[in-house]
Length: 490
Image: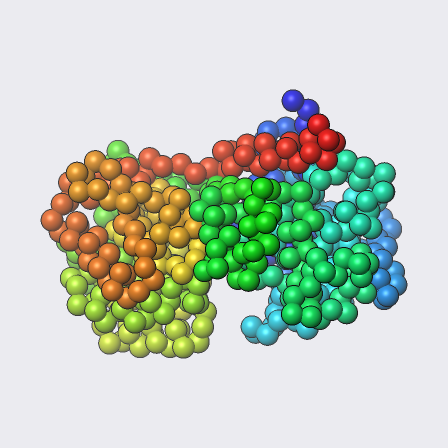
């Protein structure tokens, strides 16, 4: 089959800039698509944190003209580089006024007031850059609200531009909670015409993600379960009706993970490597982890790990409400994360109250995240919603059995324990309540103490699972081709 020209637009890309899972996808999917033979290009903003020298970025000749509606034409520079260890080109839109800031979207949690103009400018820049490069994409792959203007522009401003004669669009929703809501005057900047206002209108203002959903040729989410969930009131964040109407073009594609980085057999950030045929190194990693968190080095009790943002979405209030009852069990818990200030202070206090049972590191360290995955026996993820989730997939590979709420990608990737001991890769609960969380942790702990053979078999089951990017890339490839055929009326 013919190769595709694919242009991926994202507000963040690993390793250049990251706040969440979007960056992981934007940094990994292009490599896998390139391996399938496609011509893939990436575009992202050039924030101050993107080190031009470190990544060998080169300034392209000539400035890029970017029409901004009533603001007139603005100008940007463009830097070109490569994804590390690949030949995938990545272009950085350079505009000091919009992107010359330390934060990507906010400053100390306060969103930049001109985020609407910033990302409309970026979206228009993507279109203009494609023309400058004379790159004719078969598909432009937009991500989240930041680039939701692209499908709108493709169907309006650029509808009759020969550079995009057969170009289709895919919009991936990584987290529906964030939608890009602004005042209605944004229409004058967006430039698609006020006759399209009704497609974006929400409570008298503009919702950029709403417009993207309406105009995109296809919509995807980062797991099959999440694609179902966002059609419901519980998970739809007010857009469930619109998404349900557009469900004919909705697809769920589970994110992959990079097993060259997240595998205990090759992990250079853990003290001892291991694999399913020889788990002895895991016990040594556990002992080292207990030492790191200054809790007693007890091999006989289950050690539960947590890594993630200390925010409501991740179920942090559930954990806070349950923690005293959890620590009545004969267990240890180690936590790595940062987020809401009350949570940071609360769990620091818990560590002081239970020095033999609870260890806490406020902040983020990649090496420590790897060590928690390797050294823990169980991994707790009680998310209120989880579009995909990666830590539970990492945990599977490290033989660290996940305890998860059955939502989104957590439900898709974890098979519940069966008492026959032959099946299952973790422990799931359904209600977002302290009792459900406590009972499921208790179930996992009971299995540890009373069915060790079943527990070990589950570890082997877990370590045999694979969710790599090759499979995900083939699903995206199939979806891209459907978009192309639809655009051409085939």
